[in-house]
Image (tube, rainbow over all chains, first blue to last red):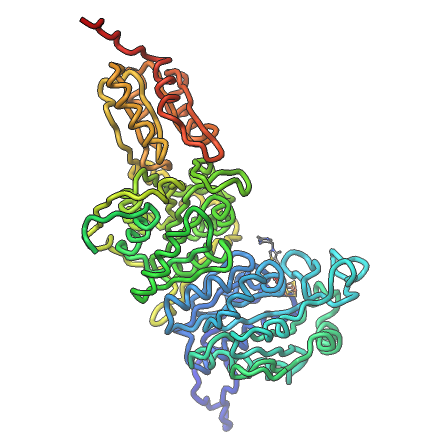
Length: 261
Length: 358
Ligand SMILES: Cc1ncc(C[n+]2csc(CCOP(=O)(O)OP(=O)(O)O)c2C)c(N)n1
Ligand code: SF4
């Protein structure tokens, strides 16, 4: 599509919004109202804005976003379930002038991959982690995730998550903020247009930090999974805004290496 | 460094990797291979290459995956329990066709076992080890010199076939000091890697994946992998033979067991028994064909292993029922004794009668 203004009759039509170059023209496989599509689009916009698409290498997770390479027009690798940070660290150490990010769900990052998550953060690896928290294992059918809210029904907590036998929701930003390694840690929510804008800004901050060689950043995105939240898309977004944000406060935890919270 | 030096097998392997152009090494502590990780810590960092002490073997093998995906020569090392943990990663590396070198300095098992030398991981190494239909090339050194030399070959083979290559050693070879001659030539040439993830500058984006869900596509990918494995079977088999031309009894052993077997061949020959040795240097692909060719003139085969009899199955597969096979094995860190090997040899061939003294 050309960016040049086009004449239509007497008026000039200017294209105000275009698909980012970093986003492929692929029909989505995500469910209606899924947050992954939004995060992909924002990521693509940030890669474009910062002009880093051609030197970026992404790691797709085992999870609903495993086929991120269908959408993102940059070099991408899969990784075994939970191991994306290990793969990302190695690529970054081998190619320090490339921009490397991992994209991970809550099951991937906070359950099976917790070891890799903590140690990459603690080493202060100069990578960016995009953490999509939708409170469930989406791909495998909506099982309890480490981030499932207390009382939330999932296919493996049919009576609602019970803190006594399954623990409470795991707060990754808060946990990683106890480490000295990270440079930027922030939680945002896809709970409406303002939340989307804030997410774009957070991603920009994180990638800019990597470009500047500052070190590890993690952006946690509270994200709707209407299918496994058992809600229509609009209500799922409301669930993010009301239920999730109540348990997972939206804020910057670490900024320029300093603890804010 | 002098050309001829005294080194442990683990150090010799590390120096081999460095001279073979290893760009990135990822390790996690486990005995009896710790010297190798320590050697890499000193020397990789000295050379400005990548060294990470990973948080686990899971992380280490996936770091290898990442470094290999970035087009770099990558290696990890561990010992038996740690190698078990790496299996998922090795399956992913094989599926994504990434070149990588994995060193197993075997110890006694199963479970935590002990830290003594063993050869109980033969099945795991030669049958794929992880999930799915794949094989890995497996190289078996029997000296510090070969720990050094085969590492060169491992990197070259990994690149040539875009495949994980396992160096299957054991605690005795790893810890033993021997004089070795260091490689002086250049590293094996690195082939072009247009598939590597380096950033999509001026080319379509690359992807590395093993999730292949399109209708029929995974079977096609498997057929492609199997064709590669067939090529490896044809092109990569390596073995050493000693005194096989006129042998009545053939010993078959690899690694530390082969060192015992070499002694037993000399002993048997001194007693007038025509014994020989076939020592596979590649455990996969295995020298089945060579064994089959030697079989018709043999009275018996003696297989020697530090296991309950794992390579034994490959020998049986090669010769069918055509030659009787005796097995001498020790487990849990035991090393077969030359006496036991000689006793097995004598089951098939008697020593020449001593001349009565004048
Ligand atoms: C070793 C291993 N265990 C389990 C699985 C099955 N599995 C696939 S995706 C997934 C969880 C995905 O959940 P999450 O990380 O929250 O991402 P989402 O799908 O919600 O985006 C699991 C357990 C696997 N692929 N590999
Ligand atoms: S299951 Fe949930 S996370 Fe997965 S695509 Fe559907 S809405 Fe998105």
